[in-house]
Length: 226
Image (cartoon, rainbow, N blue to C red; front, side, top):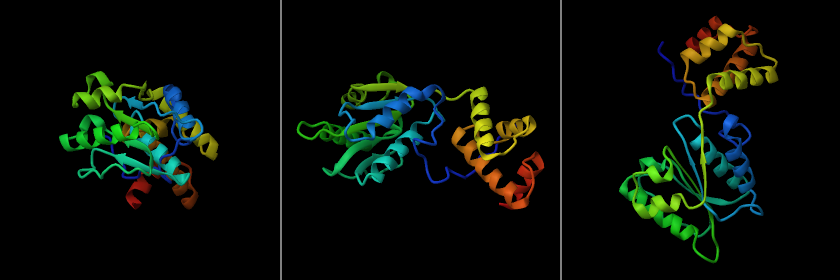
């Protein structure tokens, strides 16, 4: 059955609080500590795992948390085709989707990394990719540095775990999700948990607006109204 991808993002943006950790609790706990300057270690952190395991969610969450403290952060994603020069004002460097980096991006990432960990005022480096450091097809000096510190392998939540998270989130809103509705959501939409949670938010709002229970016809009506 074809799945529908909703262009809905995350309400209010990704945060550490709205990340559903499941088997990735150790990585989440590590990042929660790291965003506090008094607890943050200059030792680099690398997250790796398949698509929908939450890598970019966590990097953007850290970025938002640090910026919320008034800090400046360097962020280099695979879509940043012209990376800026390293900024001494940055308190951390975030390198996302490193497995997709071009030669230009790899050069910038290496420069950022070296400047970030330089003696005197070491900054935190948080990076993420689809593969463990040893398997990355990157320039050797960057690849080895990414594996220097803390390395966490992220896992995608299983379907029972996704169902449990959705059920818990629905219960917290006072919303009933029948099994047939849950089956429809998981079979017809992106199974990325962030997208499913945002879908639930939209359904809750639409159900309140129309004074109807969440059913499959309601989901179809909401899609037709968009």
